[in-house]
Image (cartoon, rainbow, N blue to C red):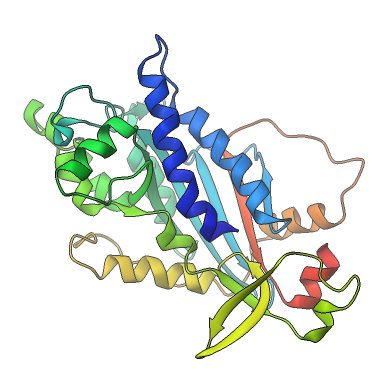
Length: 306
């Protein structure tokens, strides 16, 4: 499911963007993000809810909400998407040319809006950038011995904010949005969604009509187990982000990953409720950004949702 997608979607993006390099009009970040949303819906098997909230500007292209209905915990990730551009053979000179983008009447930095939203106390929110790379960039990096540059990567939003705010000269504005500076800090999508989270089940799952979703075999506590793959819990995602922050080049000197919230926000709870009990009176809302809710639940809740 999601772990599989985290490994398979980046190579697709590499190839997709590479084709766009040779067109008169290149594919933009929005196109890749749309494709990713479609893939998440398919991979989620009913446990990934997508909607389009009409909410205040957050500086994000995507909002990932991780919910555990069993213990009521919650974590939100705000993501801004940027694509790398570059035609030369020096991949380190390829750059995210829109990284210093400003918006609004006051010309506020997009990254500052993103991080200010995440900094709200008690919001259990963390900012990330999701970066898209064509095969040209990835291949050059691998040839140079750098294997972690992929079609899709993630990077700490607070680190990007620091780089953007430090770009006070023309040289720094060029350097701080280059892969030479940013690539040591990027990490794969799989660090969020892998290893897969599997909810073990008993023998009833093998009875006629007993398995509402595909079953997966995993190791649990040193033993083999059979279960349903579900999205990672808020605590799992939080711990994976914190582990990334603890590594070299993980983002020293920037805010720590917040603890998960012990309550699910009302707006997110209503999303899940509307999904499970759709009403003919629900009206579509205008597109502001993609909002994705990843639901982890007890087996009983999961079966009921199916």
